[in-house]
Structure formats: C-alpha cells, structure tokens
Image (cartoon, rainbow over all chains, first blue to last red; front, side, top):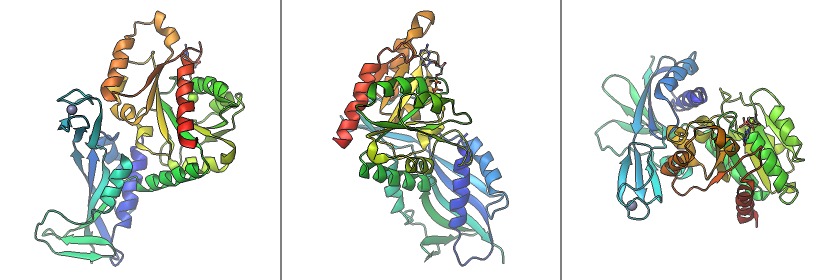
Length: 117
Length: 259
Ligand SMILES: Nc1nc2c(ncn2[C@@H]2O[C@H](COP(=O)(O)OP(=O)(O)O)[C@@H](O)[C@H]2O)c(=O)[nH]1
Ligand SMILES: [Mg+2]
Ligand SMILES: [Zn+2]
C-alpha cells in the first residue's frame, strides 16, 4: 500500500547520495534498516522499489533489508528485552510503562555504487 | 519517538565498525572502497525524513496558532465520520474546530461533516504514490486554506487504513484509533504499530453488541496488551452512547495545549 511512497523516497535519497563528482555510475545495492515494528512489508517494498527505480541510476539495484528487532525497556524495573510477539508489557514485572528502544527504524544505511569509466 | 530516532541517526555519520578500509569524506558523505570494485557510500538517513521535517514544521505552525491537532484513524467503515459528526456537534461552538478529511474519491464525508458548521477541507490523497494515508505536506496545504487563529481544534480524518497512516507523521498532537465491534477482536494484535502509536482508542458501534457474538472483553484485553495505559472509550456514534467521556477527553487535551 504505502510501500510505493516509501520506495520512491528510497530512490530519491539514493540518487541524492551519489557523490557530486561522479559523472556516471550504477547503484548496485541499497542497504536499509527496517524495524520489525514498522508497517513495511519487505517483499512488497522490494517490488515497489524495482518499479520506482526504473529509468534512474538506481535501476536494477538490490535492496538489502536488515531487520531490526523490537527492543523494549521497562520504566518501572529497568528490564530490557526483545519483544517477539504482540505483548507490550514488561516480561519481568508486568508493568505497562515501557519504552520501545528500537524496532521503528526505516533508515537508509548506505548505497553501493559502481563507477562507469 | 520517531523524532528522537531521527535526531540520533542524523549525527551518526561515523563508521563504528573499526574495520580497516579506505575512508575519505567528500561532500558530506563518507566513501568506502571494497574489493569487488563497488564503493559503499554511507547515507544514514531516515527514509521518510522529508515527511518528518514537514510534520515538524506543521507542529510549529499549529503551536504558533495555538491549535490542537487530532489525527483520527481506523479501517474503512469503523465510524470515523459518524463519530466526528457527533463529536463536533458536542464540541462546537465551545471549542471552535475545523476538519481535514482524506477521502479517496468522494466528497460524501466532507458533506456529512460540514453539517456541523465546522469548516471542512477535503484532501486528495494520491500525491505521494498511493492513496492510503495522508502526508504532512498535504496537511500543510489544507491548513493553509483554514483560518487557524479562529480555531482551537483541528481534527484530521485520515484515510481508512490501519497500516499506513501509523507510519506517517502529519504534525499532530494526538492520535486516535477507532475499532468497531463488527471487526475482529484480534485486530489490535494484527496492527500493533497503529495501537502503539495512538494515544486513545474508541471501541465503536457498541449498540450492535446484542446482535453479535463479539467478545468485547477480549478486544479490550488485546488493545491493553499492545498499549497498556491507553484510554479506551466504548461508543456508539449512531445511538449516541459513550460520547461524553470521549468529548471530555478531547476538551481536556485541547485545554492542556492551548490553555
Ligand atoms: N450501528 C452503528 N453503525 C455505525 C456506527 N458508527 C458508524 N456506523 C455506520 O457505519 C457506516 C460507516 O461509517 P462511517 O462514519 O462512514 O465510517 P468511516 O469510513 O470510518 O468514516 C455508516 O453506515 C455508519 O452509519 C455506530 O456506532 N453504530
Ligand atoms: Mg469517513
Ligand atoms: Zn519491569
């Protein structure tokens, strides 16, 4: 659904990130970090990325997705743990006052380019 | 949450791996060569950074004009428009309000909402490569057509969808999710991000409970499992039940922001 909008942003940022002094290159790979709590379906994003990259220097690039686990910290007892199911109460003391430390990422880490000389 | 993350990554341009590699900085990006002939260029940016910056600008705009912004989300048909009509009837004119509605192709919702006397702006949603959510930029354009000094509350009826709107900050102060009793009790577990990101939940269409085999306690327990201390109001927009507490919650939030 919203993966197309996200894919278009990825393509835009990838193009912006090509160093200015390079005349011509191909982006071979885009490295992403996506938190498991974010509402992005990797397969659907990959499909949209292919479409959005058409006729740009990013066309044909691989989209490498590193999935980031959902880490939580309990504000009551300080316990830190990885959330694996849909339960957001402390696994130690049952408190509901928790902070989600990671798992919401939707970041471009890097691009890998090949210069065409 | 997304903002603190954003600030964090913004300043993390340095490679912390400590691996030996050719490492130069050009034009603000760090460039790294590796054996295969390809170069890795560090980017480290939020994919939605443009939307997030725009949302932050909206937040400043609304703060400057002292407007509280409530983003209302649900599946299609859960009762956003019906609830907002009844809500505005109770809020106006004590709390002068306006509505931005993201409807995919009709003006039905806008027409229903306009009956309350609140100014209504309708947004076309297919500008960002999809029509499943509103983005900050669209809110800014819509807000531009409103007299923000004349209102204390701006309600945004987002596009009917439990997935996408949760990912897109629009510069709101609070988020509400509406779940109706004709949907599955397990919806909160299937859409955890939405129920985590919202500040308040409405369980709507409770007038239908006598006719359904719906486990209301399970639905509420599932919401609590995702967001333990979120207020939950049980409402019926059409039978006008449970709306007073919800309206009081909104008034309290507006007062907290604008005094
Ligand atoms: N029985 C009942 N029907 C409702 C209630 N709230 C909304 N509806 C009906 O549900 C349908 C969809 O409502 P609408 O407000 O358009 O949902 P939206 O798509 O979320 O804006 C309409 O036919 C409404 O009349 C309610 O509390 N009880
Ligand atoms: Mg509606
Ligand atoms: Zn704890």
